[in-house]
Every structure is written in structure tokens, then in C-alpha cells.
Image (cartoon, rainbow, N blue to C red):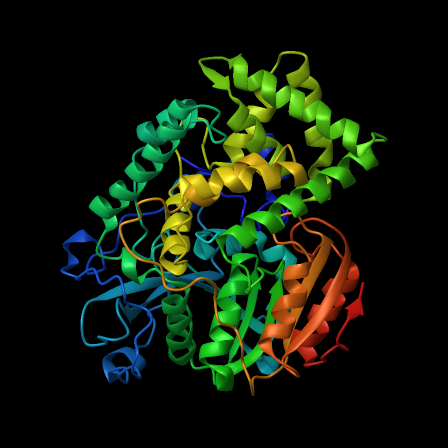
Length: 525
């Protein structure tokens, strides 16, 4: 099964360090629960409609049974394998239509978690978060990350949610832990032969077929467009006139989509670590190849190495692992797992010492450190259990994107991307063909629509050294939102996401969210 280095904010939030130290808080906390009773699981009777999510005519009004809901806030249960949130947190669900073109039809429940504003007298409203992925569980993550947002929690109710198809919101399930482990151990993500190419594409097709068997009724309806409509219904149910929202990584795509669909309902929106809304599947692969190599070069310079020589050193290690994986207990560190471990450390500069240590050990024939990093990224816990975050990620991505590059197109792209990065280029080229290969439903469009004329100003924060969502994406998002709407803030630094790591960005965002202070376009930190 392919990894996806696109749009995740966990390492930027500092969770990686804790995950590697204690192997907790990565995989197990985000494990998806089965679809709720009455949700959109295979038994719900929902008809799979590949065209859903992009109706040609105006959508019908939502019934009062949905718009008039009152959430039943109760003490939260513990996420699987994790700790129960403190008493200040409360959980509830909001019922949404599976298909907004049929609002009186089947429904699913979107899971919410909330901590009420500390200063009730000066409360602004609710602030909803999406931490990326796509597929990250806001219900599991927000309580862990709340210390970063404590100042915002003075005047906002902090609200996390599991988007449709994620976690407790009818989470998509595609394969078992044993199937995941077998694919991880046996499938080469950078195939070098006809046999490896066939195995790679066959595994991707099996993954999609597993999604169709287990969660097929929901697959056409996991689009970002549908989730944006869920956000607006949640806003209404929570009693907010406008949506205040903090989106990170993939969450910026969701925020931009919301602004396009509901410009009149935009309150204070922050988009940090921004996805380029103008890029298609190949464009994202090209941008990420440049972004990850840029971050790798910056890491190598920080250690006193020449980037070209350091890149060649890592390439030699990966070639060696491709021929002869390192044994780690009963497992093996393959080229693909090593590449995953390298990539995840580049999401935050604080993680770079881990990369130095892991590379040194691997070159001495010990692969445990790189394998542990890969396990963290792949959501594998110490008992060999995997979360289904990657299942949700793929379902959402493939429902969104109508692009289905072929294997010959990937092979042609590989030469170009290898020239941009011999470390990351081959994987990202092949990923374009395998990610949605033989996917059981059609995707919505080549890239999202985010133009939002008439919306209130939206803060767009880009970091110059961001590997996963390169800085140029923020420039394009600000432009696409429209004049007077997208407000670009540049963070000159490293890592995936700036809030909480750049004091200047944090002050700028806090002033915007708490006081309504809109910075000048092009403000640089």
C-alpha cells in the first residue's frame, strides 16, 4: 500500500518526538471506529452514485429535522488505545445527509468534541479545526494539541470533528492489519521491474476493492465538497452566524472549498501549510518532489554536508536497502520503509536530529530507528495494529480527484522527478498511478474550486521550507480566493505549518482570530 506524504500536520505539531520516544499517541489514538448505527456503512442502503457531490442543479433545502438539531453533549469516551479526554471536554454528534442532493434520504453522524471558552463573557463563538491528512481525527487530536491553542480557547469554544469517512464519522475501512502488514513488507513503492510494477498496481487495486466491499456505499460521498457542506450544517447547529475555522494542510483545501461554497458565511478563517488549489495529481507530485528535496537540502546544510553529496549518500543507502533490506527483529527495513522514515522527519526542523541518528545507524547496518519512524508515519503501534487513517485519506483523495494517471504516464514522469530529487522523485512519480488506480468510483474534479468573491478576509500562511505543501501553494491559494479575500502571510522557516512554531506567525494569527486584525497582504515573519 502506498504511503501519502501529502497533507498531514502531525509532525509539525510536535507529536513525532513523543511518538518516537514512547510509541503512543501516533497510531492508536487515531484508530477509526466502525460506522455508527444508522450511518452510511454498507448496510445503510445508500446507492453508490459516482456523480454525487457535483450536482448540476441547486441543492434542495435541508429539512428542519437536520437544521433544528440540538447536540447532546456528554463526557467523551477514550479513543481506542488512548486516554480519555479531561472533564472539560464534551462529545456529541450532528446528523448530516449522506447525499446533499437527497437530504431526506440516508444520513450519517459526524462526531464532534468541544471545550467551551474559558471567558464566557467575551466569547466570540466556536472555532472549528481540521488537522489535515485528509483523514486526521479531530476528535482524537484536538485534546492532545489543545495547549497550542489555549490562548484561542479563552474566547472560543474549541471544536474538533471527524470528517465524514474518518474515525467516528462512518470511518472508511479497506483492509485488515494483516493485509496492511503484508503489503508494507512485500510491495516496492519504487518498482524496478515488470514484476514489481505489476505487484504494486495489483496491491493498489486490491486496496480499492477492499474499500468497496467494506465501505462502498459511502465512497462516492467522501468528497471535500460534501464535508464543507457538513461544516456549514455544524455551524448552524452550533448556533454560529459565521464559521470561524483553523485548517492545517489538507484542512486548507477544506477551508478554501467552504469559502467558495458559502462566502457569505465566512467568519475568521486561517489556512496554514496550504495546499495548492490549482494543481492536479501530477502537479502535486512535482511540487512535493521539489518541496521535499528543498527540505532535505536545508537539513543537509544544517549538518555541514554538501546537499548534492548528502543526497547521493542517502540514495546509495536506499539502493542498498532495495537489494538487501535490513533485518529488525522479525521484520525488515525495506527501501520503501526507509524512505517513509526519512520523509516524516522533514515535516519539522525539531525532528532533524532524529534523521541524523537514524541514517547513521542504517549505514552501520541497524535499521530500528528508521523503521520506528516509518511505523509512526504509517500509524502502526507496538502490537502491529494500524489505524485506518490512511484508508480515509485515500477514500477522500480519490473521491475528490478525477485524475487517474496510468502506469506509462508514471514511468514517463519518473525520469523528470528523479532529476528534481533522486530520493523522493521516483516514489512520488509512481504514487500518481497507484494512489487511485482502479478506484471503484469516479472523482469529482481535477482540482478544487476556491474562489470566494465577497467573503471576509481569509488568512493564508505559507512556510518557505514546507516540504509537503510547498510555499508556492499559499501564494496560489491567496490569489485564487480573490482580491480582498486571500491575505498572504509568509513564514521564512522550515517545517509543515507555522502556528505554534513561529512566534511571529502565532501573534499574527492570534490578533486576527481574537481581535479581527487583518495583517497587510504579504506580511513576512
